[in-house]
Every structure is written in C-alpha cells, then in structure tokens.
Image 1 (cartoon, rainbow, N blue to C red):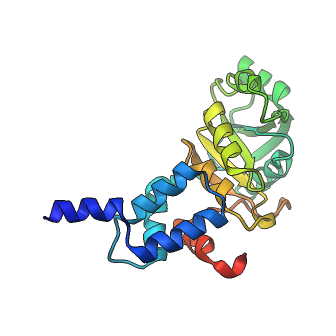
Image 2 (image 1 turned 60 degrees about the vertical axis):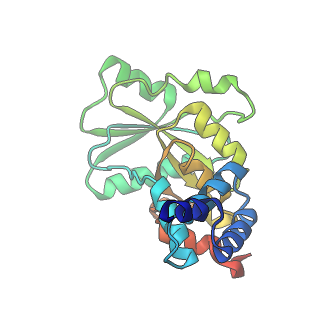
Length: 235
C-alpha cells in the first residue's frame, strides 16, 4: 500500500505543487523535459511547502563548483559571441588579485601556446578568452573541443541568461562543458537559460549580475533560485 501511494505521488503530484510549479516553469520557459523532471522530483517531498519542495529538487540537480582563485593556473573562457566572456575575464582577474595572485589576460591562441610549451609561470593565473562562435554552427564544437586538453588549463563555458533555454542546453551538451558561468542575470526576468545551463551536464561555477569587474561573480543557491522562480510579482 505504501509503495502504491508513493508511486502515485510521483506520477500525480499534489495539486498545489503541480499548479504552482507548472506555471513557474512556463513563465521561465524551461525546456519541457527539464520542467517535467523538476515537477516529478519536487513531488518526492510531500510534507513541505511548494517553494521548499522546488528548492530540494533543484539542490538534487545543481552542483556548485566555484572557481578556486588561489589554485587555478589557466582558465579558458569559451562561449557564443555576446555571452559576456570579456566581462567575466575581468571579474576573475579582479577577484584573483584580491587574494594575492599574479594574473594576466590573453587571447586563447597566445595563452595556450605558453601552456603547451610549459613556459607559463606556475604561480601566474592566466585567464584566456576564446573567439566567440555562432551557436548554430555545429562545427564550432569540434573546433573548440581540444583547446582545454592541456595540463593546467580548464575550459569554462560562458552562456547568457538572455538566451533561449533550449539553445543553452544544446551548447552545454555539444561542448561538453564541465563548468559554466551564466551572465546577464540582471537583464532577464526568466531563469530558464540559467537552469538549463547548470542542469545539462555541467556544474555551475558562478552567475554574473553586473558587467563591472569589481562586482564579484556570485553563487546561485537552490533556495534563492526557487524563490525567484515562484515570485509572480517579478513578472
């Protein structure tokens, strides 16, 4: 009996949860498969409020992976044109300087050449920006795929919260990003792209609410995200 009840609960979430979350997913334009999965997973928590259930469901899928400014050696930022890679690079350089790191900025080709030859100083953090690409160009993924396969260099995807969520999911999957940074969080009321970015196989490093270097990259907590998604007044 208990098993049957649990199965029915997952298949048919309680009415208040299904209604509230369904409306929120639609407002934020989440990909259909992701929206349905989050509603199902939130139903595993029947004894809590709707926002708490959504927060718990998000926490099961979101993997925070902030940049370690003290240990990072090479960071290669890859993303579509207009995603905000230059602003993210400036923020990383500023934050690393604040913890006492020597830093430098480079275009991808020049910076990667130093790592390939082993001539990049081990105590220097090099932030590199790859050329932007057209997200509709499937060949771009193969062109960039090998750039980060160099010792000491990590590729981090940069995507914009202004983009279509399905497109963001496709980009993260195609480039097989391990970590992503979501920009332009201050310029959108819809969180579908941000959710798709960190739930398509990549860990979420940071989000950016401002282009100014002194405004630090931030973490996105499941509870905060759930509250923003369910806040009807923001739409």
